[in-house]
Amino acid sequence: MAERVFVMPDLGEGLEEGKIVRWLVAPGDTVELNQPLVEVETAKAVVEVPSPFSGRVVTLHGEEDDDMPVGAALVTFDVEGEGSTGARGPADMPELADVGKEDAPIRRGSAPVGVKATPPVRKLAKDLGVDLATISSSGTAGRITEEDVRRSARRRDEGTPMAATRDDLRIERLPTDPIRASIAGTLTEQSRIPQVTTFRTLDASQLQNFRTELGVSPLPVVVAALCTTIEVHPLLNATWSQDHIDLRGKVNVAIAVDTDRGLMIPVLQDASRRAIAELAAEIARLADAARSGSLAIADIAPTATIAVSNTGSYGSEAGTPILSPGTSVTLAIGAIADRALVVDGAVVARPAATLSLTFDHRVLDGAAAGRALTDLVDLLQSDRALRDLPR
Image (cartoon, rainbow, N blue to C red; front, side, top):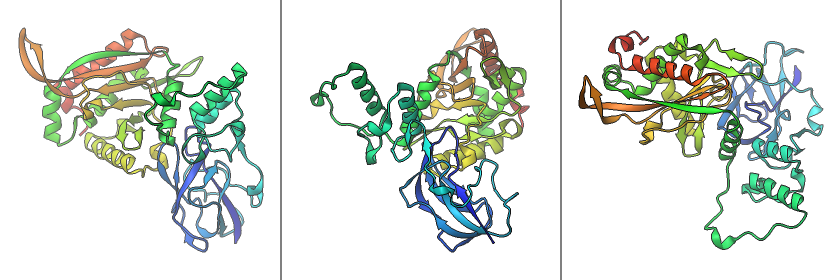
């Protein structure tokens, strides 16, 4: 038997720490490769971390509700043989620490990992040159908030204490949880991208007939049509990389899901290779997992190449979606409802929706984005083209 230490993995998008929610094993337990070990709360979701080994659990490093930095020892195992080659489990698991190294001090961002702050807050502190260890926290469970960092920076720059807060103007203070802080950090980053939104009205008559015939919602049909449109307009599935544009080989669709814990964006992998029925089943699985907080690591990995938001699911007629990280296009689908449309010179009532396409103007010009959206609308309005989609 050989002793091996499994460290806290980077669960994606620059995670610097995760909170242990619940241990699923105990010292002395024998576990199999990829058996869930622990539930960890990140800024995106609660995920199950699988075992990279088959072996016996020797030590659990950390208690429930502990914040564990990435790279810190998580579980010590006894495993068969001297080496661990081929036994690491999922490809996104981190390197394994040598026994004894878990006692070494680990630092991330701009302050010791003992300071409670989310990755976006740590980055803000680094950008503003603020030492997190010197800040008094106002967040839940002693977490430092974005406002704590900005207040500290203002006090430093002004050289005088901040004026008293007008508490008489505030009804209450709502603490930010990790998901809300992550959303805020992502939106701040994405606001730096030159993004523009273009709109088209969709006569959804054929789409409604087709999706009713298949027994699915409009969303998987739109995703399938979008994948077909990308074949003609590959820049929809691209990203800006400073001195070049990367075209993606796979179409991985980020699906916006509204949950009680905030907006979640799981990723529908390899959408262009899936039929509509399979797309519908996978979208339903991802939405259910997002709402229950049980998304797997692969479901929230930063692998999206394009994003879709079904704003019509909560009654919105239209919107201007913001780009998801690493993508150049986000498509929003407004509510489908009867509208007055001009058909063959006559005004008639038809089911219609507004499609909004937000695009990175560094990757696509307005004309290119407009042509792509027109082709998508034409496909969704054509019974023949819809029936050509893989079902």
